[in-house]
Length: 65
Picture (tube, rainbow, N blue to C red):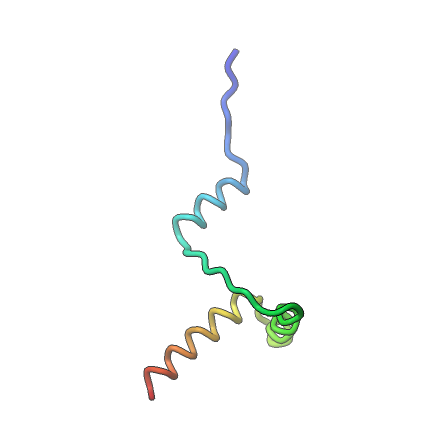
């Protein structure tokens, strides 16, 4: 009897993420991650959301120079 393999929710999410997003690896000095994360959370943002907003705002500011 053959068994049909089904994908888990995690596998489905990972497949979608690979198709929909690019990954950027960011390195910061020890202790900086927690400072950045704490600041983001104090503003109601995730770490990822904060970094993305910072990038978008910097690009916009640079265009206006």
